[in-house]
Image (cartoon, one colour):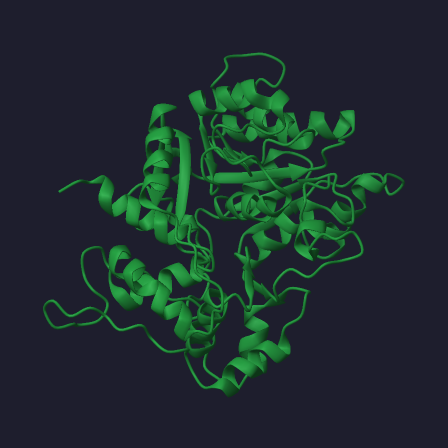
Length: 407
């Protein structure tokens, strides 16, 4: 048996338009394996009401991605693999596929995220570097997004593990969650920093090889940062920034939120200072973080999301040789109409839909997966749903305007 065949099937399923993280798990739960789910997808999409043809990546496209990732020394992890990080796997919207450069086992260590402004002040960058270095010296991995400013300072501090202005490179562990493919470092001037992180830590992304980072990719990168960490430290964040989106995701995932106080006269600090006003842990040094950092993340209720079936076991019994029939749209038309009536071009948390609808959480999630497959809704990292991208004054969809790397 070709071991690449199951991987290729999972990649094709995960890369299919209209199949988000929750839908991916739902399809595996319904059909038992990725190959069977792929065979049923076109008919299921038609039954869900999709008008346009569903694009499923062809096998040769996926084989090129697998071979190209291996050629640069990377590997691809699928949800359910032994090396897939447990903290991500516990999320209801866990990424189906991760591409990794470096030691994938380091994704499962005790980690803290450090994020903040791209246009960081000298003091903010020094704080990020020093805090990352001292936390790394205590055996805590540092997660960030490889952006300019605070992110880069945190990565560099962690790499020197306790010696922010010298010492041995690789003394500490850092994890870079990136928005583009593994072969597309961003910003370009951080290519060597990414290489150093791959040698001494790990680089991880949801984006396929060869794809340059786009504005819509940054929310997924933020999900990785929040999901891989036990806590999130924010240093210098404006009131509307990608760093605050990461902070919101961290809170939604049950992580501890920290913030470094800044001058009230500096607009770069208004968002991070507001986090303190709302209850974030005031952070001046590594002891403030270590004192509040849990040994493991607080488990979130998982009733809101289906889980993958155990590997090799179908989720439903079928007669030998019988192909699974495509399922009709879940629930009645009234349920779908009720859900759509509550949605807009502004994100709506799935939990809000559950509270406002008279249907069960499992029924709503099943209906949402069908609506996404039909192209009627989009799911966003962090557990929100939105109507398909609408044009704005600038001609860009809301999620590309609000979620770029704005800091």
